Length: 282
Ligand code: PAF
Image (cartoon, rainbow, N blue to C red):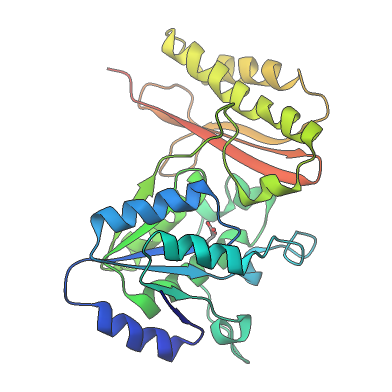
């Protein structure tokens, strides 16, 4: 696996990989876990060559967020990517992505203020900007993202459509531990007790999903059932529990057309997110 640090090096390494079949891109912030590996495997299966990126993007963190303590495990990440047959890893320093005087951003308006965008102002501007830059640098045929960041997926889909990026955005299912906890780099912040408490997120989504499967379509009633499940863990501080349209992230009154049930909460020092997609009713 070749490792590049600059845009110029990356462009010339990508040029050597191009032309023999589809080129896949897996953007990450490192601290890799089995969720990331599932993206790499999906890319490997669908593409001739796979480019991964590791960049802890400062512009998607708020001033009081965890940018400085975000886990950085570069050597272990490289070993995992190498073992999965990644062809190229682009791991730039912040100054390579945001050189002196950088002043252009990508703002996916409206939708970027919903769910995590509401709680983390500016977060999705940072995500859209860095992902647009990675798309321009690598020019992949397919780019792979996890469904766990459902709001990120909706925003990037909109960006790809609105700015005519000539690529397919591939969304891979959430990977969970056997007890249901969605994998996240931030799970490393959890003490054993926090980790146990964090299971309430999955239980909450599961309760809503079960009520929906039993025929309940009224989202207010479903949210009440979810909030009751969350109340079992008073130590978990809810940020939001919403039932929204998965494309617009706007609240929906019924499940008739399918919906995204999304939750975010603070568990100890970690802000965790999780979600489930409810299919449309016949
Ligand atoms: O999902 C992530 O890890 C990040 O938001 C991404 C897409 C790599 C952009 O920094």
